[in-house]
Length: 214
Image (cartoon, rainbow, N blue to C red):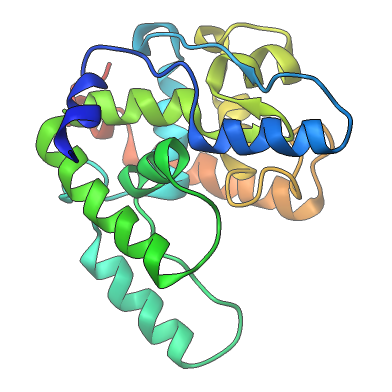
């Protein structure tokens, strides 16, 4: 039962996701009948700059881990044990299965399902396909999902025309794409954008070649 829907994702673009369905339910409850903005595009129609930006921002060990980043989990646990702001350790793979199948929140049930599905996704899909799914499904703003919808909404261009600064700005809002806005970036979002640009230069295109990207 776990493998079948994931195997289908190897060849078929998902028509929607759990997060988009939940967004639609919130819209309707508020009397807003808009559908979530979402348009699937293949990986070769998404700027490599955005692929590099999300790896730099969200999961720099994405090319080499197996769906869970044990080192990041250990560091997050040490940080959280000291108190203060809680730090997460979700990989791009975990975020992809969460967006597709699960719900927001920090319950142990959801995190357990997320980890289980991430392991299966890594076993059944290529890294390149997982990244393609993530770039198409990630939320980049209120009611805005995926690289193509975000690129057209914020910059008036298709996803394959994003430059490095635009890509880094989109990646900068990923931790909380409703609170942080690419169209009205706060000083924090701008500083995060600059940090991501630095990380992109340090990682270089080798990070994409390692997963079969351009």
